[in-house]
Image (tube, rainbow, N blue to C red; front, side, top):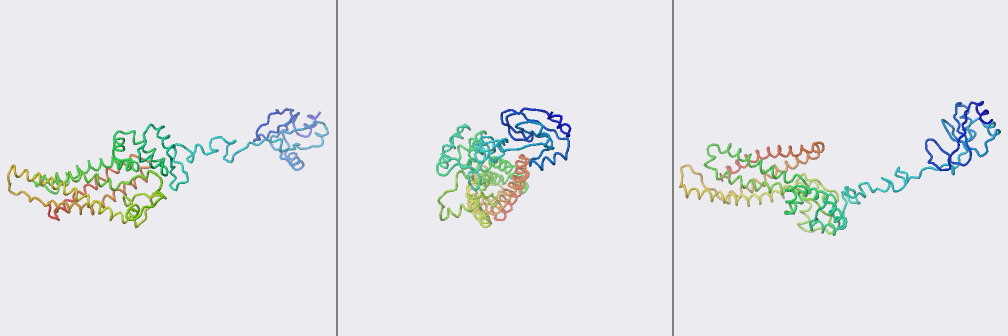
Length: 414
């Protein structure tokens, strides 16, 4: 009888029984109650509106109605869908504020994110967002990577924390033969490789390009006198290759292994730590920050460093060249048109001046151009960094070789 009465008013009722198991409240809006109930499919929009206003619950589309005692009077007195929603009838899913269906799920506690991740670069409150590992954490991660930590790394982990990015980069260096050898044999090279993985490539490219470019420049400048002045060429080549390693090494930044020291250095050491390795070196927030004054001071510091390196190598190289010329003349005797043996001291001073001025400015520019490529094109095409290094250093060596010949002849040493 109830079905006939509802059908006459424009509704179709189908008896249904709701299970005793509570289900999440979702788009289907399910009520969990005991006893029989009826599901109403509304076909009359006006009756739906009247039911909403009279009962305080919206009935649109499909809803589940729950009745305690279905009878004809209840069906006849209601023109809309009866639904008395109680809080106990609805079981909403509990969330932990992370968008998940409860604690312990992925994303709810940050266990898979950078902050608590074991392999990521998550932050632990450091200003540079690099996680600091204590001794136990560092040794555990090193064991998973299958590597042994240097004593310097263990000391940093014990004193304030070892940077996670440094440990991961060091593990990558152990995959290559040359990088593994140099990183274990020479701590200074290792620290520069940690900061710039292309450090060895830059040195190799510099030496190879310099050897070829120096030969071309010497032949062009000396012309027909090349073989008569071969000792000068050989001296320049040997000194140039040694200085290539010095030039690239002095400009290359060294990686920060651990936390910022709690005790601040004083005196000259404090002043030197405020000066970058190169004018265009990147700052590390909270650890190494460089302003305009410190970057300008870098040019002066590199002038002194390059000048001292140039004088030492020039003294050594010209001394070897003079010895070769004296031995040649003693064996073959004096020849017509032979060049005068230059002063070792004067040649060393020319090398120092050349390194402190021309080389200093040119290699600072090379460093800045390479960094600009790393921050732009190389982010999309990593191979572009290697191509740019070769091209930039090739042009730089051509200019540098001709500049040195002009300066040496101006000073009268060649």
